[in-house]
Each structure stands twice: as C-alpha cells, then as structure tokens.
Image (tube, rainbow, N blue to C red; front, side):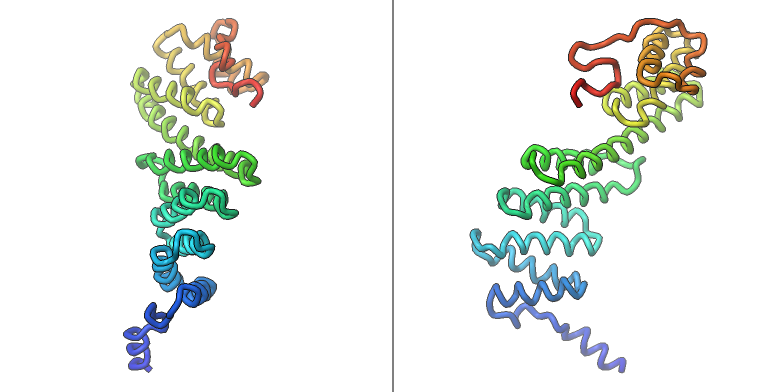
Length: 256
C-alpha cells in the first residue's frame, strides 16, 4: 500500500504534457478545480494564461479560475494579481466587475491583524474604488461600499487604539494627534464617535478650549446620547462649526 502511494506521488495523474491542445487542457484544469485539486488547477490555468491567444474567449476564464484557485489555496496576493490582470486586460468582460471585487477581497484578506501595517487594507480600498469607478452600474457596488466601510472602520480602530494608548498614559498631546487623524480620515465610521469623545476628554484634561467645538459637533450628530452628555458635561455650548463643502466636522457630506 505504501509503495503504491509513493508511486502515485512520483507520478501524479495531472501532467501538462498529457494535454495536446489548449481546449483539452482547459477542460482538464476545470475538472481539477471542481475536484478541489487547487495545485493542479493552478498549474493548468497558469499555463493557459501564457499560451492562449489574447482574443481567445477562454483566456479571461482561465485568469478567473487561476485567481480563484489561488484564493482557495490561501495565496491571496497571487489571487489579487490574477483577478486584477483579468480586469486590466478584459475590462468589458462579463467577469470583470466580479474579478475587481474578488481582487479587493484578496488584498483585504492579506491584512489579517489591524495593528499591522495597513498597506494591504489601503490597497484593498483602492481596488474597491476601481470597481466603483469602472463599473458604476454594477450590482456589486453596494457590496463594495459595505466592505470599504468595514475596512475603514478597522483602520479607524487601529488609529483610535494607538491614541488611546497615549491617552491612558496621560500623554494627551500624542493621543490627540491620533484621535484627530480618525476624524480627518474616517469621520463617517462608528469609531469616529468614540474618538471624538476621547478627544474631548483629552482637551478637557489639558484645559484646551477646542473641547467646546467638538462637543457642539457631538451634540449635533448624537442628540440625547447619554455618553456624549456625560463626556461634554461642563463644556460650554457653542454653535457647530461647519465647512460649506463638507458640513459639520466628521459628518457625511450632503446628499450621501
């Protein structure tokens, strides 16, 4: 039994030389994909992406299955690159907007821990925005927007936690930098509310007058919010400062 296993390992049943045409190799590679033989599928579809003529209708499908097999194999960078190649080379293909979404998701999966370098999260957001820009009528736009919002909130949490680290050690000036960054970059996320409240607390601790402006904004955005009322207790009530193009600080632009 062990000998047969060793023979099978030395002579795998999927050999590229056994397939004499691109069409036959495509069918065989697809069968391997359907059998969840991801390495074999990658081997076959990767060869097809180099051998098929540029106008062959099997070429975008080969990129799709190559990328998807990489995804299943946990090779998310390779998956993202293959999906992106489909979008770049075949922007009018019926699979293009799906590929743009999956490319974005693959980049997002590379950002496994929010405290790490956010490069892949930012790359994922840029990729989602490519989908939105290239295919404004795609049924996938709402999905992309939801997933962008989720990534942005995770980025906001990353900055908030860095600021909170300094705040808890009474290094208020350093904490303020991070809290303001959350408001500037991720003002529409759920974390922005928490960051602005912590910003008020930091300003109160160093007796800085900007606490009043942020409390005005919080009161306007979150009326009857007990946590906001507690944080802003004793802070003078002032009018909300607005930007004619953006509205109250941290608020969604008009019409969105």
